Length: 73
Image (tube, rainbow, N blue to C red):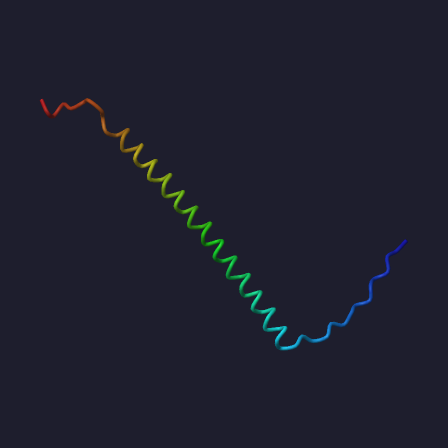
């Protein structure tokens, strides 16, 4: 049984006030999304930097021989 397409309803044009309110909501959504993505990016960068710093420290510790001070004697 084929489904009949619903007739398109004509939307009446928005008043300038409605349009401005809708645009303001859209702008706020975009700003909120950008701020959220910025916070996530900052956390990710901090996490990457912390891991990198920890990794560098471990590499440095591996390169320094412990208790093998031949030059002092």
